[in-house]
Image 1 (cartoon, rainbow, N blue to C red):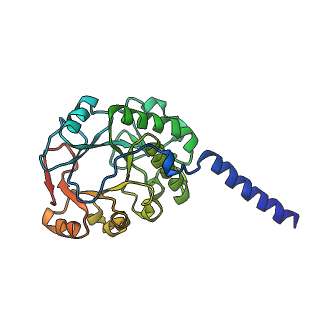
Image 2: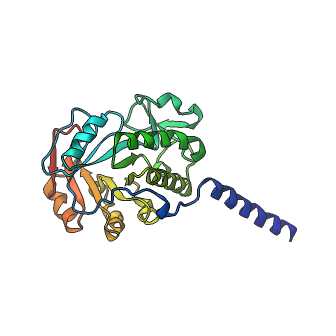
Length: 266
């Protein structure tokens, strides 16, 4: 009996400690933010001099490499700006790379030299670093953020990251963005859409047609939130019809994402 009571107490204590760090903020306590909707044509470019497209009303561009003057220019042209950064890895070329503790840095991301997974189980230690990036996004005037690498629980990170560990970290990212008046996208984390579609403002997909996971993103459409997608390998005629039929906003591009090749589905 005493053992059962003790175990119950420890469980309740663990839940209490967890809630002290992360507790859901009421939506009415957050500032207003951009509310994107399906049907917006987007352009994603993460390197090189920005190439503008007349049909694009939304630009997904690199947070660190884009001057706030460019964001102001896009706004003056009636465009919305999503600012990209990696939330689940440390990239050794970023200006803040040295601030990430070595003990929270894991395996190199396959195919991406200079990029290593982060141990997202340690939300408390990573929070100030990610909040600084969100502060930068808000200062530059970004309308939203595209936080990449938020599916480490499915990868060979070098850490034992569980589904719930990742969920807790991703919820932290969303609420930290919202507190700064930023919309936030869920990128490539298909398996957690059911748990996160209510919180995140849009989805970003790479190659979901190639991996046969696009149907998992439909809860965003059901909530009148857009699904922005890019395919690299399939010809546009292979996937555009299917994307348009479910009101996804897709383009065909190359993996360099330098703006030189782009075919929108609509």
